[in-house]
Length: 227
Image (cartoon, rainbow, N blue to C red):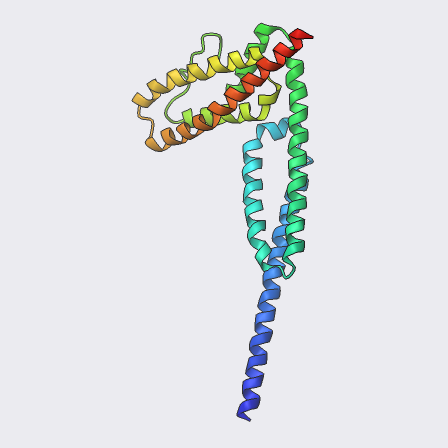
């Protein structure tokens, strides 16, 4: 009788473990469904809306990707789960490339417009319409918003860096140097060390990207001149 009870007890434990595993896989399936639906929803967003909210889109995508990667461990067939995750990733990369390409076309068309107006278009794109004029005055930037200004600047450049002309890079360099000069004033006004560190991280990411893309733009211009 004691032996029978032990066998029954073991069977109940096994059933409980199987049930638990099944529930875990069910939760993992929900995580994957949410991940897939999110990427599908990105495809329905207009270019203008995507550009305006790209930082939030990218952040949400990275978070959902991390959740999906963790959820793989709860699938019985991990290989199929990994293949499914890779498929969603590929779709997102394709969508991002498509939006970048369309943005590059728009930027190229804008570059053909009046040069003086082009400079103002760049200023508006980087800092908001009407916030920065020819005087490059950043009086509206203070210790409370300067991190956001740098972050928006970096994101704008990163999204459109492949579409800029040499003249565009010259204007972007002038804006960036003017912002950096104003940062010295903001530091004296009480810029927090935390925000200062984050700005330093953005500057480290920006510098090499700007250098190489500017060199590419000059090389392309020289190549066109020789034709």
